[in-house]
Length: 332
Image (tube, rainbow, N blue to C red; front, side, top):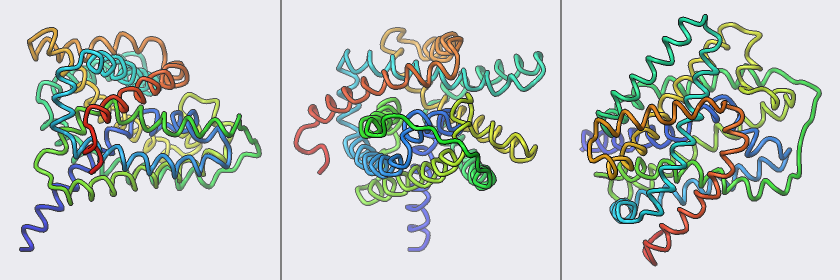
């Protein structure tokens, strides 16, 4: 009996790590995404994070519960395929741009070498499929979460006397946009997570994954609100941790791991949609990595600040479309 319980919990644990890894990208880990969607709205941002956590739970549950239906809908719908491709492409480009920004701290040779290595790793794990994605999340996510917590604890000790906020009520719109963006672009990955999970395990996975996101969003938001000057940096938490070499190194690793795990999810998404055009997994995997890499030349901050909100609107449309197609049983 104990072995059975351990096995069930292990399945839930792996599923939670994959879900959290799909959300914890460079925008989240660096703080830039949190600034754009939450912190810039001041104290009301805490309310919007509560709303986001609740919406994450609902949408995680929707995708996991209706995984088979959604996979069929995506396969048959040209509109959803096109939107999934576009959103995944933009998100994937931002991850590559974030890594370029991160590796710019290295000498030129090592910067180029590191970026090239990441592209090769992405192609390799995209070819490996969902199993490869599970394995790398199991390996990286526990350490990444712990390191991120240490970075936030350190940054919480900083306090700059500078406040910055814009139309706080707009956060009521940005909160669902943020959730839609992060769930729609990982839709195919979320559907794969549901395989071999029963209803109770699905609920447990959604609860734990939503709570993890909520916890880190709240903590990160507290730190950012205390340090308004960081809002203007491309990677706020790197900016805040630069006074301590050890913490800076940890944050560097956190952003790298966040980029890599999300990149793999997105490359998997892109490869799946490209397969319908190329009919060849190897060609699809290569293009799924090289195309967003080329687009990343737009720059990290520009993509997060301007293209993410646009993609969020597409995400809202995709989710409403899928819920409509799934019918009355969508959340039952």
